[in-house]
Image (cartoon, rainbow, N blue to C red; front, side):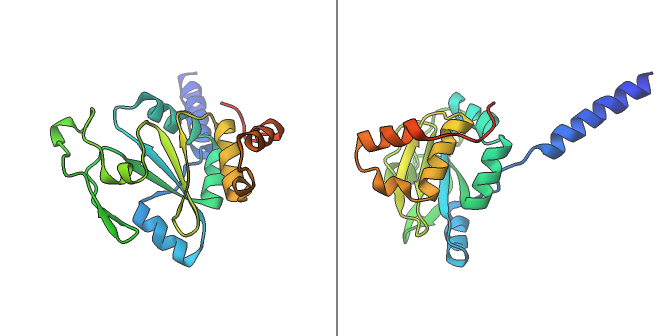
Length: 183
């Protein structure tokens, strides 16, 4: 009997593990290089190590199979620690965090220059860039899969370019029919 329970638990674990889809995260530099070969927009998750809603976004939204499948197909996905110590090249500029304190790696630290470049002040923020790595928009705060779906599809299809007023966006939002599975 014990063997059957262990086998059943293993089968359930294997099924859940195999059915989970993960986003293919790359660095910002890699995403920009990939754009040269195959143009796609960039979705950049700007987070910090201490941010609770950032961890929820990872666990609840980015682990959603529909979100992961859509992002992998239509975007280059970038994770960026807004208080990290990475040195990176973007738009012919070097960005770093000169005041980074390694002793504060798991708590609030100084802000990275790239976060300031995009004027990010709260976390999480998802930054969308077009096929030439030009800024489209920041989406601030935790988003459930169906909430993020609206932005993923709107930016992918360039529908945001026609939504030049709040009332037009409100109408788009009202008429949007989400298809991604709920949490």
